[in-house]
Image 1: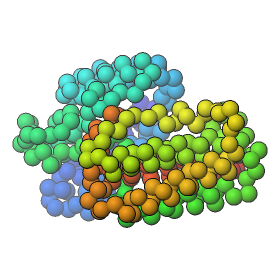
Image 2: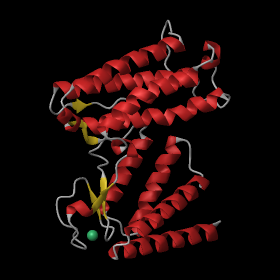
Image 3: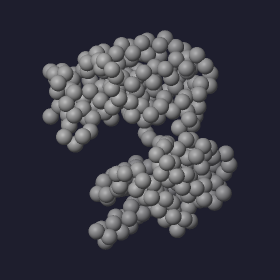
Image 4: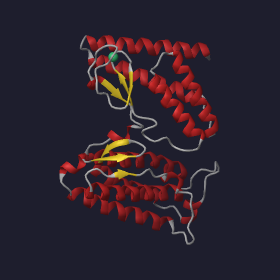
Length: 293
Ligand SMILES: [Zn+2]
């Protein structure tokens, strides 16, 4: 297993070294193949490694990873952010943007800067624009305004099709692994849509809204005194989405680039916030597909 891991690591370094060399030669189309291969190999390797499920154990793993980073000579700012992340995990909370700023890695030499890059790379002289920013996930930049509106309009139809023919009993029945029932997924989509609707209103009303962090995924398991049916929850989701779409279509185009301050993610534009919600929803559709079977 260790031999396999070190062979993989060696292959990855060679692929990336070759990609950088090809980019120097202007051979970007071949370099992209190597970078894609390196990414695919890394993800497949990572899926084979077992990680802890409990957050206490995860906190220990993150702290240990911070110690290993020191051995690689990585910048102190990144190591310290790791440690603050481990502390937050151990306390059962999500670290905020000032504790864990977005890291920027110099594409030429690998130098790491935490937060916005304002100066040339101190190691190789690369300009700030040459750094790669690492966002919490790809959702922020998944979609551009027109594709966004289209996706936001289409997803409720896709959910509707996935729910077709399922009885209320079936949708309320939790899976054997103790995970979410269809009911929880639909509730989660509605809750996320309502947070999105609230944020769109803030962006429309203010130039620089403050976007409070919401632990939306914890709401889906809460029950009310007179719980609505799944059909009613879905209807509320669809109506709220229709209202939001009408507002987004009516606003001036420049509003897509209004920037708010998100407590967890830092500066985000309305486009990024909408892209986040649109892409996030799609990740829950396979969950309903699996529950259908
Ligand atoms: Zn550099």
